[in-house]
Length: 279
Length: 125
Image (cartoon, rainbow over all chains, first blue to last red; front, side, top):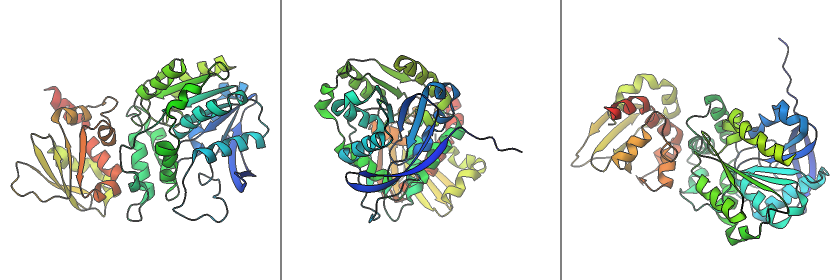
């Protein structure tokens, strides 16, 4: 039987983030407007596998997904040690801007989910002129800690098992089992302390506070979409953001915290009309 | 309400393997009632309904009966579909030594979810 090839190509490249050399892996497919996709905390670019295979999308957009440092196939920087990883707002912005500049992407659309849905708000505040549009999936301005995240990295608990268990519950019970399992599996494959280190940004350092009022939607259009089953970034929290910015949010039925990965078929039904407006 | 945790054992071979080294006991509380559940090597070996005089257990999950019934619906609504979602809404409390629970989080989620179709039928009676 012949192998059914997908249109995705993967590549490694080196560039500096905050002056430190990094080796980063990314995947891309399609032609047209660059659409840079940001994965969630503790996972990697495979979350966007369906978008990278969606023929309709690939006709008009060049979909590009990179694995953050320490995630997926991207390497940790030199002289790293286990247990010291903590994502800051500054370094997250630096890696995104460094990647975009390094690939010479002009006015891309950036779409991020969860921590990615948070960082696009920071991008909208600081660099609105750099983007054609920003799309936040599961965006919330801040998340108060609601469970003890120290459980995510302790030597007497298997990190893959507990991170998978946490991710599993964030998905909708109605999402397809195979896509839910794969989404959970990505979490089970994360390195020790990486999910927890990303949550430092999500729950503390990246809190947006009143700065949200600085976002000017007329400079760079923002779109916010949130799955109804998400209890981390709830639809109510996204609505608060949308009301503050002065835009409409889109509440996605039968989806949780990982729409593009847990239920891609349904998610694309919501995404295509948004991309049509951007195009 | 939770007795069938033991009745369902035969249908749980897939999730039992996720807790093959786990032996523990925990209480599920509906505030009005308590259920003491014993697990040996991932298999539910005993479920006793209280009241208890001196229950011996490692951890306890407490939510109102109404909240547990919402969790046990065949397709629970957002916020009731997961025990951490209930924790987030502050309608469920985790107490005691949480190591067995957190080190086998997916197992416990699937164990409780295995009651869903059965209990949803009962709740309609």
